[in-house]
Length: 71
Image (cartoon, rainbow, N blue to C red):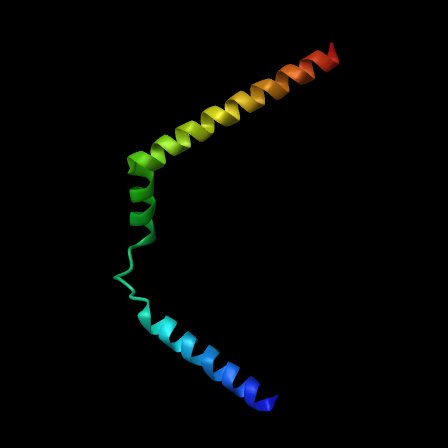
């Protein structure tokens, strides 16, 4: 039983070391630059617009239901 635990621990440690070495870190980007890039990307902008439309429609539906109940 003890040998199995040691083997399992050795495998886990090896996997951790290999995984941590395989990750390549590119030069970090400043936070303000990341925010500008995310704000200006077309896909992100379209996604935000779609989500805003969905939320607006949901709020209108809920408001309509509330008005109905209060009348």
